Image (cartoon, rainbow, N blue to C red):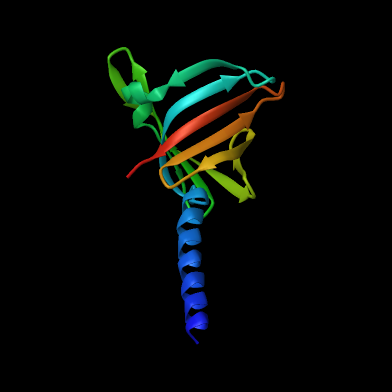
Length: 141
């Protein structure tokens, strides 16, 4: 009987620890995000350009929101000479299958989820010439 209780206790402890680990690696991309970095790579994987949006106030004010109803909302800002100017809010549709998010706008854009934790999201966009961009986001609280 003691062995059975010990085994059940061990199974419970192991199942609890694996749940917390999987929540971190399988965190939902649903929610509001702001862009931190955009990194451009050649088709061979060589980094050739990095944009640091976290240090540019107007671009860092821009948010991207994935809603549970399949809508993707982009609320963006640009800089005009002296001020941050809000652009019209854009709403698009998206679908999600496996590690791919497909956003339907003027063009269909497929983004591959590279990393998805509770606070960070990295998406990969592959270009026709096989060069690619990694876009790094942080969750907006």
